[in-house]
Length: 229
Image (cartoon, rainbow, N blue to C red):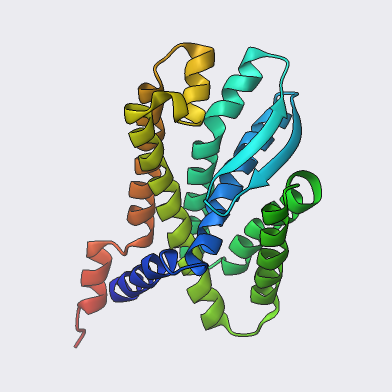
């Protein structure tokens, strides 16, 4: 199991930096991040105008909110939501619920295409990504489904963590251009760097929980290696 996880992790990291393929895959995290903003806005009686996804891995959610708490919850939700979804995918993979995980990503993608994403790149990306998810659900190879689900799980937890490193660095060197951290600074007067640190810490927590979940326990490995006579 450990060897398999190591090999699949290496494959995932390589794919992340392959031209075009890496960008295509990493936009999944961007979509989930922006979905977090949109859902919290709606849950707090705000309005989502549209979402835009870009090939440089950036995304924007255009919202309207009438209360401070709506704006605040929407502002903190992006990075937290992407971490939660990534960890949930790890849990589903660990429990062997590969199709549940693919269904989760499919539902998020379809909702974005139907209701929110309106820029050309975002629409084209979703139109390409959704059929790939559908193919995974209808094809017959359980091994392929398991392997792709693992790659996607590792990809999501990795990119959700890496994105918080980016925001942490930006909030330190250029706090006026640090995305969600800058927005939260504008409505709470808490420095963008503090928000960058908090985003990083929550992502690190979910990364730790993911490793703890997906890696087999040492005592279990020892039990499996016991030779019975």
